[in-house]
Image 1 (spheres, one colour):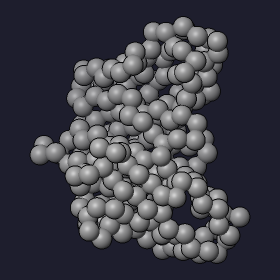
Image 2 (cartoon, chains in turn brown, blue):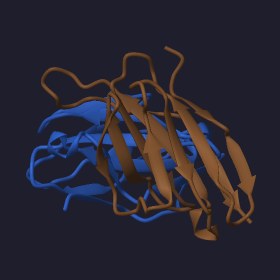
Image 3 (tube, chains in turn orange, yellow):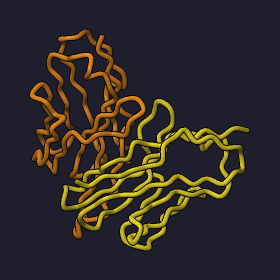
Length: 117
Length: 113
């Protein structure tokens, strides 16, 4: 396994622009998660997919945020009309749901840093 | 809802000192518990985990025991090294919530030579 891969690693954008992050999970991992982390805080859950289905979205995921996982493999997280408050690290993670459904380990990517100026 | 509380940092220790980072949780079910470590500018790496009461997770000299009676999962290491300097996150995962992780706020550890 090559691990969870995220691109781009860093993005600087002007307020009001749209940005898109891509995540490639570990192969055969059917669950994929997006988190957001700001300086000095723990990661906050945004949304997760099981295969191609988006099963849960946090209240943190405003209408400007959209995530997709069209073929149940890679995922994209798009932020429209970025605001300075969107500046954070966006973490992607994946796991494999086991038969008993508990104790599955979640593996994280290196994260994508977003700076909105 | 479910939550995790960690001791506040930063924690500053001398090399070879004993480390304890406290973590307590609140959960309605029977969660799995995790410790993740984050080095500067990097993502999170799984350090250890425990999936049921009284389980002990261990890795790289770190260990933590799942204590259901005290709802705790304290991280310990007998002798820290400078290379252990990082931010440590305690987290829980409940399958009735899609297995997503709920994190504590993190504890920064700085180990001085």
